[in-house]
Length: 494
Image (tube, helix red, strand yellow):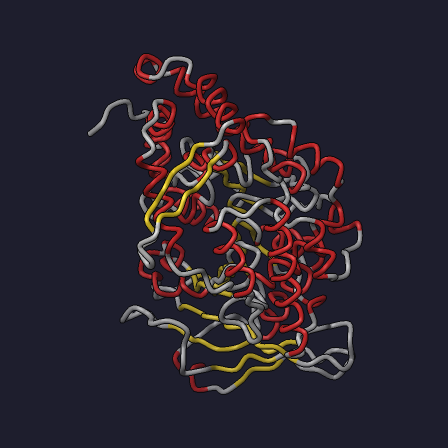
């Protein structure tokens, strides 16, 4: 059966397909109540995919995963839709539904948004407000390392206990299960062939799908890919420093930037080292109480002048670094003022913990993690690990088999997209993956950071992805690529 969605389908209450050996039939049930308001004129179907929480247990309960199916704007759409899910792990895909007018992909084919299990609009949602409250308290009260560690351990235990008391099986929230959810959705909807669009963490879901369920996959876009075989928790600090110093070297290669900020790479490194040895103290008035709060910032904090910069602001980084070096802390003070806002809700944190503690932490060498905390004097104390081992010990989910830490091989057409200054998923990872993806292309967007296809200020990466979906065996070459050049770094105040 070809994949054809029409208004008529909106009247169907549910679709079922493929009974498994336990007798459970995954199904898709249409819902009139949506997660977000959809732009007028955009035809769509919204509903919930019902799947087993634990596919290995005959007594498993079922869970619900929200899905939008947006109908193509073309009167004759191609019959291979795009399935899209975002990163995280723990992030929600559903807010993208509000912006379908801007998505180029709908000009040619249907576009399906899939929420990952355990995230904000899924049922259940693995939220951890306890963790967000701990983060807020730790930052605002300048807790010492040991006190902060205890605070987060208590938060993890409280969140775990609450979620398990509600009946949630924390072992069932991982990349393998999320990939199986998409596989079952494709079957339930009767799709014969489809394309995948994934970003950041969800590129791991794409890799699992290519390995375990390749039959219906026509092509895959991996924006800012995270290889299965990469050990993020061993590399994140050195990746950060490598990309930062590349940017500053690029500044030095531009005559105006080098003249304005000579030898800025060494100056900034020395500045960070000096502030690690003798932290900067900044006092901000708490708007809620009127009382002053003093923050002590070392190199690992001040490097945020780069990490917090968006792709659109990357040209300002050397200018902002020079302000720091010369004692102008106005930008830092502005960032600190945001800390007084209410703590986050903890959306998806439980999902993030389950994924990370089952499939990232088990493959990390703790000796490397500890070494990385101390061998870089400019950011001494900055941990490369997303979660410390004590947190994963508390979360206590089962570790994944070694296959989940090994590279996949595939001949399916794959487009890899990287941002030149992305320290979270550096270009070297996509280059590494391309060696095992025999029918792949790799694009590096100069001057951009993480997830270029979501750069709304410049949708060139989206155009590249869409051209690839239309002809996945030919290297995309849209006109916009000619306009992507290295940034001209800012040297003067406006």
